[in-house]
Length: 101
Image (tube, rainbow, N blue to C red; front, top):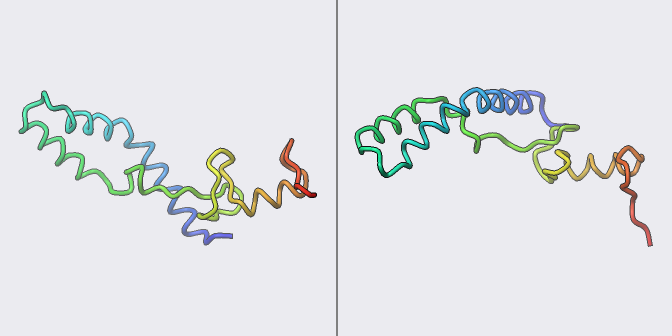
């Protein structure tokens, strides 16, 4: 189990990303548009850099929904490899069985 503080910090980052997503996307569109005058693009870049750092999508860490583990994460299941194995062994994931030969 991961530290509660790390899990909560990541959840706060996810909330900030969701809150600022539209504003950030609009500013990024202006910055990357070559038809916009350079002065406006610079102003948009300054506004973008003044937004909270934790509102950037790249700062969010993929963590297991069950245990909070940051490594060995399967995106499709939103779960770490260890939690996946435990749940599959106990039969809690439909259609998944432990292989044996």
